[in-house]
Length: 469
Image (tube, rainbow, N blue to C red; front, top):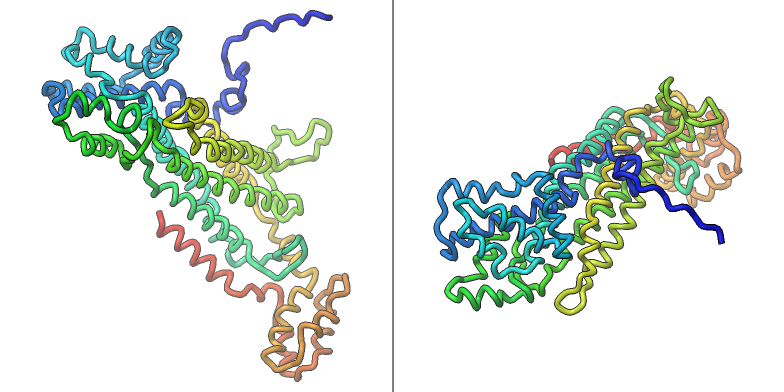
């Protein structure tokens, strides 16, 4: 048996990272790191523990705090720096427990200060999950507010710009991949913009939940040690101070349904954008959309002429990866044995990964849109290649004229498998069992004119999107 040489240990850099989010694509998603990294998990835990001490002081569990002490504790989390977090990780090597390591470090930080007498009140009556459930919800809440929603809104605005600019540009619609009736380019963008905006507003307006009620959800330690404190309103007030809704009917863990709703909203958002990416890809493939050709870029290692729609393809792939994880999270996190097991911990800790893939996808779709434009001449040419797309209008008008079974009449005249140009279409109209005035009216109709209420519907969608912000 051949002995395989052991690989040389490598330092962690963007070139040696195991995942491409922290490697190849780090620069594209780096703004998520301050929110979803292990560093920020630690900082947020400290933030919660410090503010818990302030809340304990408010109900007389600890002494009154000076304004300086209150300010210091309320801002303690944001003053945790990378070197502090590294020390906590070293403590964790011994404790093998991340929250206990943070607690030990926090105690050491208060030693020798005016707050030293509060050390024994740190984490009193709490379970790790009281801290963790709030931590992860704050991370998701703040990530969405600061990064994910603004990124999605930028993409929506770009779609709206296209919708408004091209709302009067007639374009052939295709159903089942075949020529259907005309639409407008702007209308098709408005549809996607409205779908996307609807889901983003759901994400923007939702409220996450949190709990603070001890090891089995019943305030056992707090009630036993401090029976004169009304712990239910205390917990509600504390949870709500973070902009969360209190959920106190829990086991040791806060049920994850509120987070799952967010993940499922992201799944819907990502599916909408997958649909959009694929449609734009097809329009590019058919040359309906032209692509920017940058001299310094390369489309193929062997075919010099190629310009590939790589931003939309990259987006589609990353949306799929994100949704695979969001779907797993949605299935896994609602299940926990008895009052809790730890299988959720390793899952929720990775919340930043599907957020990262999603963010990368949103950025690539936006970048892709900034590098394309409609080939208006070709779009008009394709629209006029087959006037049989007006057969819907002809058979519907004949219904209003009282003609019997006009659908079958038009089917027999147009379903030949061949394209019907303008002259052939006018000849078909001459064969219809309608009077000359009705024929003259029908001859006035063109593919460009047969767009229904597309312009008005586009305007209404844009108005609705803008009023929802």
